[in-house]
Image (cartoon, rainbow, N blue to C red; front, side):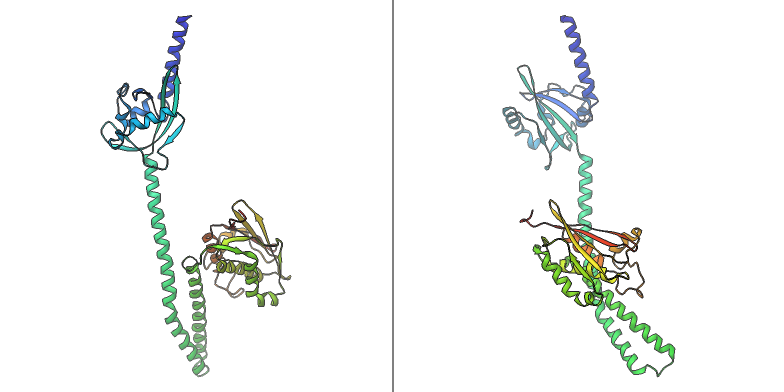
Length: 375
């Protein structure tokens, strides 16, 4: 019986060793005095030691010089209150290789009791590649932020600096039109009209570009904002269009919730969406419905209309600056309204999407953050 137990123990030891040596992480076991009693192949590979070179050595052989003095105290503290814990997450932790080089690691510690002896089992992961990826990502984010700031500044400067020469062009073409219309041939009159029209359209584009570039640079502080006030203000601004088209605005969720936002930009958001719903009306009178759904961190707003709608294959285009689904001769505008809406929603930490079908209307859906009171 004893012989069978010994053979079974040897089999268990061999099986355990095989499992440890095929583990993807480095694993070592340290006794209460700080000596290494077990190390798998991956750990030896990580720290560049040969087979069994680590057995019987103090754990501090793997600890960077800056931490060697304090490490015994940390080990004793662990054994006083042994419990599973992670080390290295959220802070820089390094291992010391045999050749003296350091590499970033994350370590998981677990206590182990074997008879009257206590051990700590450590799982070691080399996070060198992850650190490299994080560094590249951080550098890309910094560069992207700088690039976005440069683009916003470029857009503002271009649109602002173009105003004056464009104003001169517009004034002089209008002067030509007043003084010389009918005095030259028909072609000249047409040319003057083309220049005047192009200058007017350029003025609209520049003004729209200024609006777009100012969403982030000229935004107000985020604060608790009553959406009932915001929607009413948007409707007041659209009063003439609403009356001319006999449009009906139905607020299905009353009262509308308060959100965390910039009231001026939120007014512009609702105004652009409601204005689009009126502009792209069908033959029947426009009916625009506003509803909300409550979420844990956000309110979801839905603005549905009974307008002409469009094919969903064009859904991504409607949020891109100056992209239009219809010719300017059919519907006025530069195609910037929903691009501004997207930028406003994203500045508020939300997302915006659209659902539509030709002849069945369009639904614009976006999220806005809840205030502390209703969160």
